[in-house]
Amino acid sequence: MLFVISAPSGTGKTTIRREIERRCPSIRYSVSCTTRKPRTGEKDGVDYFFISREEFESRIAGGNFLEWASVFGNYYGTDRSYVEKLLGEGYDVILDIDVKGATQVRARKRDVVTIFILPPSMNVLKDRLAGRGTESEEALNRRLEEAKREILLAPWYDYVVVNDVLEEAVENILSIIRATKCRRENSRDVLNGFLKLLT
Amino acid sequence: MLFVISAPSGTGKTTIRREIERRCPSIRYSVSCTTRKPRTGEKDGVDYFFISREEFESRIAGGNFLEWASVFGNYYGTDRSYVEKLLGEGYDVILDIDVKGATQVRARKRDVVTIFILPPSMNVLKDRLAGRGTESEEALNRRLEEAKREILLAPWYDYVVVNDVLEEAVENILSIIRATKCRRENSRDVLNGFLKLLT
Image (cartoon, rainbow over all chains, first blue to last red; front, top):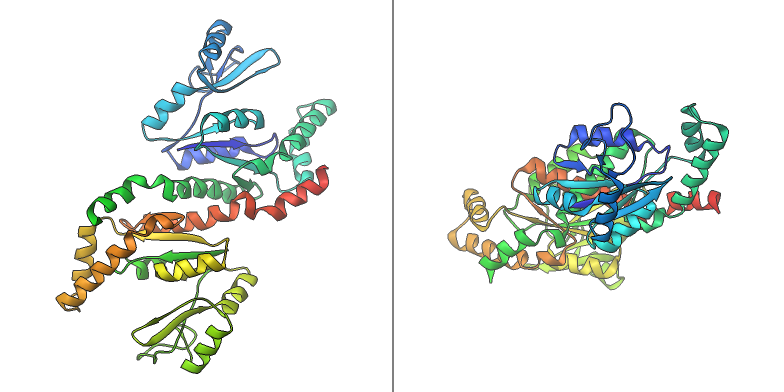
């Protein structure tokens, strides 16, 4: 099954991701493609698939992306056939993408399940963003405004998870994934097995 | 939140119930009302609420039951105000009722979430029913036919859980309950809190 998780900056998505990957080897976070240069320590196929502008644009033209965007002159996107391959191998796949990316995926994959991560409150979000201490006042405010814009779109998601206590948030996300697989419409094989015997 | 679990005879619902109650004190199985006499060891308010025919019929007339049925001359039913009281106290409430009862509850409570427990296969179901060894061939066949009729109605439920490995089935049910509480439409308070600050 395919899941989208969107989490504004400062809601703790990296920690959540690390915890989900540690606990559930049957869940895979999708690796995005990008045209930006690798930073020190970043590995191709792990942090991103690093590809050329030409390659990226030819994949856009071929309709090969589930979602893509151009940010500060670089492309970022999720390759459809890469995701299909993981799904085909039986993994549950999580796309860690923003609100605009989620909109594109919804249009292309009807059965995607979407999850929005909220901070416990706007004050906590501010503190978390400021706590990084690595950014100028201006950059911080830009992040905060961006987070506000995204939070206003949370009701477009199927599920809303508040990241107050990390362990609770992770448990809720894993529960959503488990529950989705038990939904009637995702249990056709099991049900059809009985139907064949009983009619 | 209110949940209905239906599980044909032989799918292990008593064991599942015991495990859920042990692990989650915030979840309460609803105690049914009945007009049948208590058996040895049965306690009023624990196994059933034992009430008189007159009382039961007056509650039917008053529309006080979320669901009720007459079985072998005795009434069984789920009292609406009792369930509302538990929900009001913040419990998640599970109604452990059959397919007909579930149909009645769906009509009366729009937001109920329904779960059907399946055996791993019809053969396992047969073995489990026979394994009790307490019943005549005829009684056993009656139970099996009844189970088949119920299983054919499984697709009317929101979720389907196969009880193959007990621990997995329990985990799936608990996940469905957790996930339901994260659904957008059940997160209005959280979302409205942000909306007030952001608009």
